[in-house]
Length: 259
Image 1 (cartoon, rainbow, N blue to C red):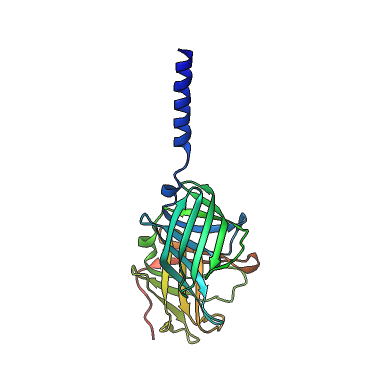
Image 2: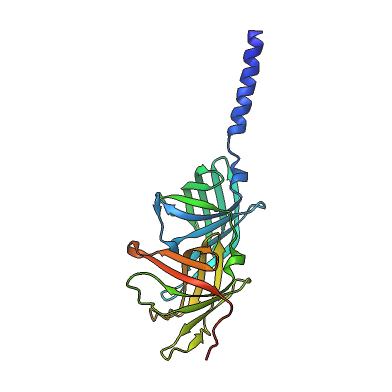
């Protein structure tokens, strides 16, 4: 009887131990946004998003430097992935048709957090050593319905040069309009905006052209963390030199009448 009891306990123990092992193939499914590198908060514009789908395709979104004067936020689903033990193996091509092979070693993966190191990383067959540890949060909330509409507000950061009010008009198809005041206080709808935005939980990326504040040319993008309470929305972005830039705006009924 003692022997039989020991056998039963061993079977039960081994069964529980097997059940306790995380199912990385299931846990990885969904959208993840990078928040930290080497346990330090990243610049908001350096954020990226990874969506792992059940058909083993991956949608990867990040800002790209196109040339000396232009950068743009792009989504790209030309990647496939497989989970092999504690490795996420990804292959695909970026927007410049460069071939990527990546192996991410899972350090932590649960319902809220993915932390990984780089086991292998190559572009067009050229190995690039990366020793960083990346931390991502799982995206579970969809704020698209609250985000769409017309917002009126301005920058609330100290010592900002952007002191005027603005209008932003966001549509459900991902496009948007931007309105600004000219030197005669006339509202202008920016005709060459090239505007498109992307939402990943409370992170949004916004493409635009010709930075009116800095006077730069070409295409550009910005990333912001946002919060919506009622009809008030705030933006916050960690920039270079640990500067946090903030905007506050109110949802209004309609866009301004333009000249």
